[in-house]
Amino acid sequence: MFDKRMLILSAIISLVGVMAGCGDKHPVPVALPTTEAVQSASPLATVAQATAKPPVVQAAATITPASTAAPTPVATPETKPTPTKTAAPTTLPSVPKSNKLVMIDPGHQRVGNNAPEQVGPDTRETKPKVSSGTVGVRTKKPEYMLNLEVSLLLKAELVRRGINVTMTRETHDVDISNKQRADMANEAGAALVVRIHADGDASVSTKGFSVLYPSATQPAVKPIAEESKQAAGLLLAGMQQATGQKGRGLSARDDLSGFNWSKVPVALVEIGFMTNPEEDELMSEAAYQQKLAIGIADGIEQFVNGK
Image (cartoon, rainbow, N blue to C red; front, side, top):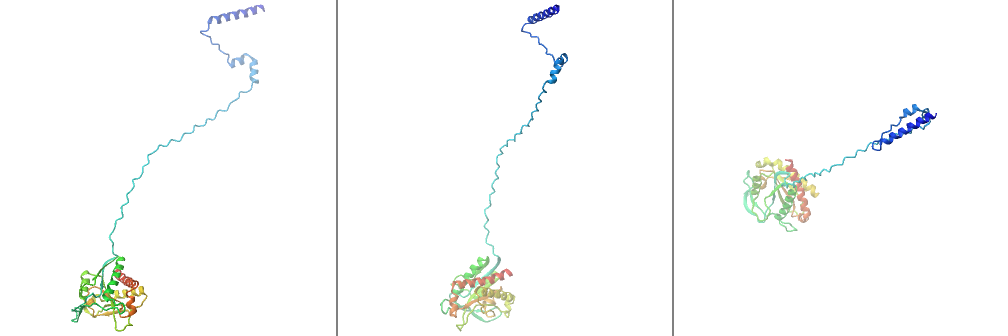
C-alpha cells in the first residue's frame, strides 16, 4: 500500500515539473473528455444523465418575412393637355327660308298721274297711269299713306321670317304707273306680288277686307291665273285668322293694269273701306295694322314655301 502511494506521489511530482517547464507562452491545451467517454468510464454518469431534466427545447423562432416595402412612387411630371382653342363662331349671313322674291306694291302715290295707259296687252282700253287714291272719311288720312304704313309693317314681318322681299316704293314722292309696277316684278322674277290698297264706296256702311286676283278671261294672264287665285285664298285666310273677321271674300278682276301686265302671280289686298267711319279709324290703329301685316305674311309664307 505504501509503495502505491509513493508511486502516485512520484507521478504527481513529475507531472507538476513538466507543467512548470512548459511556461505560460505555450499552454498545452487539455482535451476534455467527451460525453460518450464519461458515460462509458463511469456508471454514475449514466445514472446522472438518466435523472437529469430533459433539455428544454426552445421553439424555433418564427421568422416573419420582412414586409416588402411598397416602392416609392416616382413623381411623374403632370402633363397638362394643351388647351384646344375653340374657334370663334362664324357669323353666317342670314339665309332666307325661301330664296324666292316677294314684291310688295303699296298702292298709289302722293301725286297722281292721269296720263292714259293701256289696261293690258289684250285690250285697247286705257286708264290713268296711277291715282292718289281715296281719303279717310274720319281720319282724313290719304290712302297712299295708309297703304305704305301697312306695307312697311308687312315687309318687316316678312324679313323677320327670313323671306326675301322688296318693294315698288318706300316713299310717297314717286311717279310709277301701274304697268311699270308690274314690269318691275316681271323683271325681278318675283314669286309673288302683293298689292296693298284700301277701298271706298258710295255707302258709308260698306266695310270689310277682300282679296282680288286676275281673271283668266284675259288671255295674257292665263299662265298665272291659277297660282294667283291660290295665293289670294291664302292671303284671305291669313287675315281672317289674324283679325277674327270674315271679310268680303275673293274677287276676280280683268280691268286692273297691274294684273293684266303681270307675268308672275299677283294678288291685291283691299284692307278695308276708308269710307266707313269705324273701319277708317280701325285701319289707322297700330295694333290692327300689325294684325293685318301678320295675316298677310302668313298667307305669303304658305304660298312661297309651297311652290
